[in-house]
Amino acid sequence: MQTKPLLREHRWTAQRALWAERDQRWAKRLHGAIQYRLLTSILVAASWLGDGIAWYALIGALAFFGGTEGRDIATHMALAGLVNLTLYTFVKRWTGRPRPFVQCPDIRACARALDRFSFPSGHVLHALTFTIILTHHYPLAAIGLVPLTLLIALSRVTLGLHYPSDVAAGAAMGAVVGAVVLSLY
Image (spheres, rainbow, N blue to C red):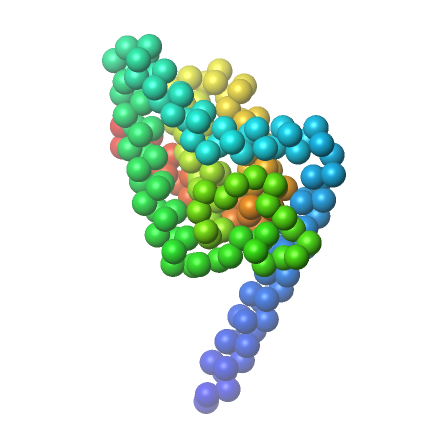
């Protein structure tokens, strides 16, 4: 009777190891793009904007110049940001996944990491949440925000700071938080 749970556990462990190997392989492939200086410069800039600079500026501009509606949207974004911060801090500490540049000798950090752990990507979590909220209220903002969000996501892996699964998890969490915030207001 004990063999079935052991077989399931072995399959799960083997499956997890396979996914981790694929994740690392894709991280290495994308990291190879750092050989292109212009691309690397663009991705470093996108990552820096994703540190919070772009979002703080947008929240501030909405609050200051957007009238009552802008202040409401800025408040929703600020609250979503606090939810995101709490969520990803908890998940990062719970999973404790080291960053690729720590685990993989072939990967180096090409930008500074804001914290110690990799999973999930807080940059992508915030970028997608804020993009969803803003484009809901200002659909034309998608012209600038969607490419920025995609560049932020690409930058996190290419610059050696995250695995692709970290970015995917951050995107999924950001989509949920964005949708929940919109459904509440």
